[in-house]
Length: 231
Image 1 (cartoon, helix red, strand yellow):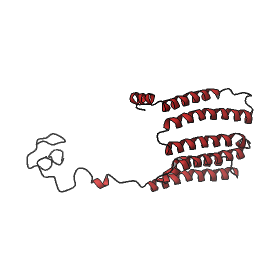
Image 2 (cartoon, one colour):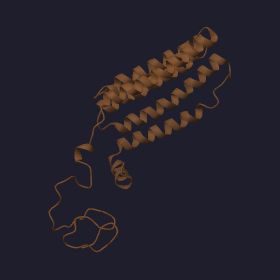
Image 3 (cartoon, helix red, strand yellow):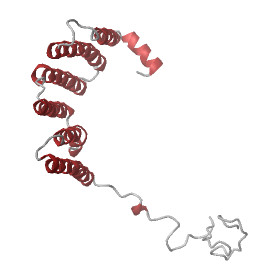
Image 4 (spheres, one colour):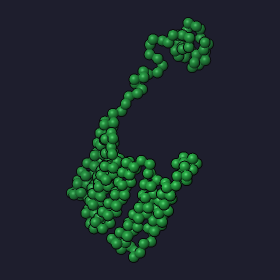
């Protein structure tokens, strides 16, 4: 019998290695009654409380908001830049952390909430900067994007088996959304008199969307692609 650590030959009655002090283990010997070489199993599988972790994240989100507001008020006597920081942190918290508070959060509910909070943040930026672009640009763009993504999420959740048609329609409507964005940019900020760049994502969205719809309608093509690409 040899030491598992240093390789020194041991006698049958040895319980520890005389050279390095390592406990002797032999498969034919009865294991020692004292603590083994590894910690007890209950110490290895401690679950972290989700609510506790979310509470810590919430505090870490509110802390920089409060510090920024206090610093801004102390330096400038009013809120100059801290609103932008606080709004960005609140939008990030709403999108990332808020759904984690619910065990079975429904994305059909949280997606409109995310876009509503984003719209309020853009409204604040518009009012704080005096840009006068919210109603003519930000509101219709955020609203259209929110409706599109909410409809897509709802169809994916409640319409099993129609993913190809949903994504196909989403690609086509996303191309149309790009046209709306460029049109409102030109209307609000007077950039151009005609559509210049939005026709390219529109054409790409239409082609990709029609391709997915054709695949969804043609069962042999769909099964062939599934066998080759595991789609």
